[in-house]
Image (cartoon, rainbow, N blue to C red; front, side):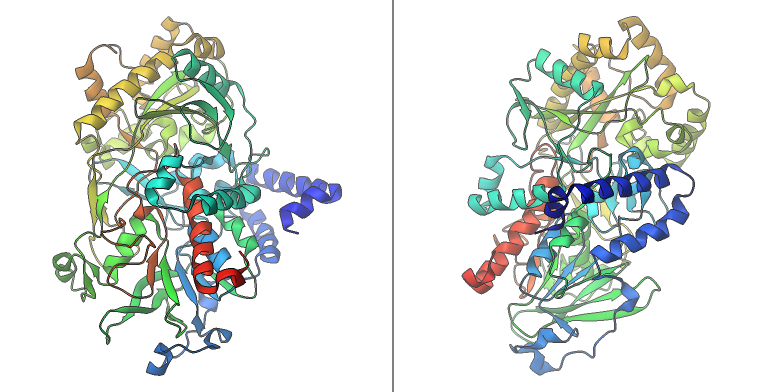
Amino acid sequence: MDFVGALTQKPKLLFLRFLVLSLISLLSSSQAAASGAGAKNNLYKYRYPFIKEASSFTSPPPPSSSSFSPRNGDHHHHSAFDYIVVGGGTAGCPLAATLSQNFTVLLLERGGVPFSDVNVSFLQNFHMTLADTSPQSASQYFISTDGVLNARARVLGGGSSINAGFYTRASSQFIERMGWDAKLVNESFPWVERQIVHQPKQEGWQKALRDSLLDVGVSPFNGFTYDHIYGTKIGGTIFDRFGRRHTAAELLASANPQKITVLIRATVQKIVFDTSGKRPKAVGVIFKDENGNQHQAFLAGNPKSEVILSCGAIGTPQMLKLSGVGPKAELEKLNISVVLDNAHIGKGMADNPMNAVFVPSNRPVEQSLIETVGITKLGVYIEASSGFGESRDSIHCHHGIMSAEIGQLSTIPPKQRTPEAIQDYIRNKRTLPHEAFKGGFILEKIASPISTGELSLMNTNVDDNPSVSFNYFSHPLDLKRCVDGVRMAAKIVQSKHFLNYTQCDQKSVEAILNASVRANVNLVPKHTNDTKSLEQFCKDTVITIWHYHGGCHVGKVVSTEYKVLGIDRLRVVDGSTYDESPGTNPQGTVLMMGRYMGVKILRQRLGKAAGV
């Protein structure tokens, strides 16, 4: 029986779990968080004894040429692994856990663990990780060439450790388009859900959104469901009822502890290839540990052994290029020796543009992240968040530049979001009345943007962000959909449900918004009939909801089995292979894909004997 199952069987253990969670919650809200981290650090080691610091790894001697031929027994030494998974994120954790049922797996993660980080673990601190721009932060911020501030994960659990927690499945059309086996997909989603997904406890803000969406015609009401269907629904969340986050890292509890090694603070520099044959083949990776020392990890000799990249839509194209796989001219400019020339790597990058409309409130608002969503027929999704702007730490920290909550500098057009503008914004924010931040946001996101951009290397340092452009709204249809979505968001803000809940009348809404302009909180556009001014609003206030994807598309970079074209023993399993973001929010599908591909690989190698 698994750990979660055991807990539900035993009331005493349930009570104990409640006590432990309460204790951790107390630690997080006090200033003693730092000293408490040590104790919690040890708690996770009992459950995940295979998670170790990168420096504990001893590099084996390079395999002799004979090890490139199939040899059984290689995996009994820790010098060679059946699978090396690069990136312990939303896809990498379930993938590695699944493969370890039958094979030896090395999972390499450049960040630390999420378990002992109070900013990662608790809903009330969601915005603090995004605000933390230090090199140790669980989030690494980057700014696309479009001028939009964005973030990528740098922690075990990946995006599931720093996101807003919303969990939903992809539409059946998406599954079909991907060519996935529907039966296995429908076994893989519940495998994830049983372990880390919860039903949210709805409060006022999310209920007001539900009723307003139904009023403006986003119907029917589909209740609580993981399914992606037209209308208004309540989805799942990886935050439990205590506001505690359950990340992809917890799926490692399903791994076989005898066959898996997880190294944290292990930053892969590049993939190592054997180029002596007709086709290049992956033989291992070079990574550096937390002290900056380099190590090499090798694959076992079996031709079916693989390096699998799960570094995400920014990290995977970057890693391929740094390893010599990508557009020849770009690689040569940086003196990277070319292993395989493929012009498509890093192309077709897309990010779903989001625009946020502030809803002021005359009463205190509970903190809530995405729970209710409207799946419209306009090609836009409507979601909401509340209560982060008014907490004391929010007002005095500059998380507004990173978080949808205060709009990521969204009242300033993207190209003008300069470091000086950010400093001005921080200064202005400190002098504002507390009331200016009371309330929350209606978020409007374009479902499948047609506009795309690309990713290119700035240098050969894996710790630095590559240059990324998404070209938001460069396609007129994306802009048209934004205009329709913002009109709908404005109607929702002015609906009786929000006015009743926030205890504001139309007049006071205007007054509060005027007081809040300097707080970089978006004004609702006054002339919602004027398409021109709404188009400008869309372009000037565009932000991200972190659902970027692409860069390693099927048929151009990888096969339908996600094997890198033209190279042996190298695969990609993450959102870089998607040409649209699945569902209203992608994490559920990315988690499922990790499990799905793990099972698929095991079944292809072992048939029924795989036991999955």
